[in-house]
Amino acid sequence: MIALNLVAAVALAMASASTAQAPDPDSVIPSEAQMRARYALPQSQFATIAGESVHYVDEGTGPAILLLHGSYASLRQWDDWARDLSKHYRVVRYDQSPAGLSGPSPVANYSLDHRMAVIDGLMDRLKIDRFVIVGTSSAGVPTTAYAATRPARIIGMVINNIAIARFAMDLSKMPAGLQAAAAEDRTHPTFHRPEFWRQVLLANIEDKARVTPALVQQWTDLNHRAMRDPKIGAAAYAQMTPFSRSAEDLPKITAPTLVLWGRDDHETPVDTHGIPAFAASAATDKTLELIPNCGHMVPLDCPARALERTLPFLKRVTGR
Image 1 (cartoon, rainbow, N blue to C red):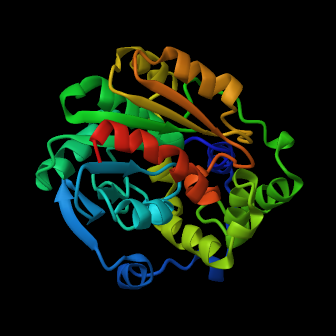
Image 2 (cartoon, helix red, strand yellow):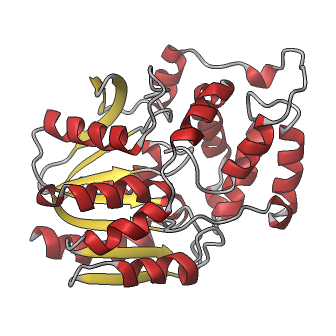
């Protein structure tokens, strides 16, 4: 889902930039074949769902869990969780358009209704009637909306460092490295260099050793298609459902709920988003788990410790 985290502020600033540039080596977009060769997984599948190409992975057996990634990420954000969870559960994850190997929506439809139609279509295709839904970061909007409007399909819900209200993004308060990368980035508004994505990741991940060259290149390549065309970003922003939608949906959700939070998140702090999300939930079975020394991108930053906090909840709601 487009938006959330500091990339949104930079992208909006870039949209107003209009500097003509000579061809740049970093602007070269890998071909579809190259992208799939680099980033498709052995279990990767592709299908047309709700009118768009969807890259998804379905692995393991047992009670089903659907993992929804955050802004500018992809299903690869869940690699660590999927590896461990698929030993005991059926784990489904997919690239939400225009991200990853799914790519842009052919009709530029990034509305919330369409997002939920894709979830319906994918889970129907896989013949999964009921499942646990897990959403991180901006995926909190479709996660909470789906749980609120399709309660019969939801066994339980995990929300991880989501936003429940609009918030101002002030680039001047961001780390110096990100400010410098963003300033350089404005000179070429149709693509981002690897250093830009490295600084984005560093700003959102406490364990800096996890920001490897391979991860930086993955984010660079997988975002090339979505970011090269300003019309994609404009269409997505125009259709973006406010984060306050989650605050409206949480009081309607009675499914067992785990609110899982990286305690050192500077983007959606636990005091202003996590604790209010927990309080807003109508679930009688609800838990708040805080993970120390972990930032906004929990699935990338502290996957093992986060999963350790999640497994008791999954075992209880699925009976496995």
